[in-house]
Length: 227
Image 1 (cartoon, rainbow, N blue to C red):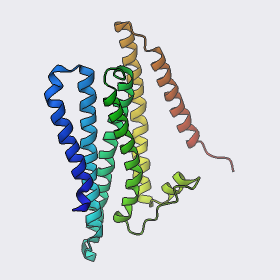
Image 2 (cartoon, rainbow, N blue to C red):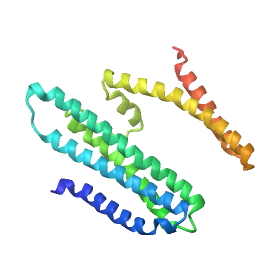
Image 3 (cartoon, helix red, strand yellow):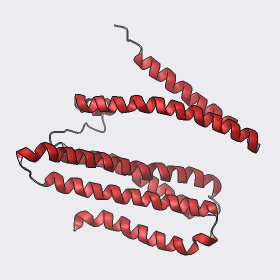
């Protein structure tokens, strides 16, 4: 029963928050309802991620036959990546709610902005803690020392060649997808500035700087090193 404590707490918080919102939603502003929905989505993401964590712990401790070991490990790996994805959702949503809410609702609805900040912090630290769950997926895996100055490199080196290939392949696709989305967003901001009269020049310059940094950084890493 103890292992279900976190999912139960998150479920109770969601039910309570949802019941409080339903009664007042028709009478509140768009910014209030948007922030509230964002916080609810973050709670759902944390709840689902916590259920995956419980599943990984329980299945990882259950002894299996040698014939079923590979199949069980694949299932645990899929569950661990699903948990990571569900943790990314509340972190991203709560971060947008925090930054956007601070701009438009810090005076009218400061509590919602504070809740978004708490959810963002919880999601961030949950991602760091869940790395330790990988020992249930791969008992032979040894987590590098987080205090090491080369922790990120050691963490990358700790994965096998197959995992590194999948990571590099996904980052390669992500790189070109981000380039396309940044260019598309710049054009969207340009047309928004023209038709609305609200200049987004600073945002366009910022996105252009990020675009330039990504391209130069990518090219410099591909450039052969001197021996």
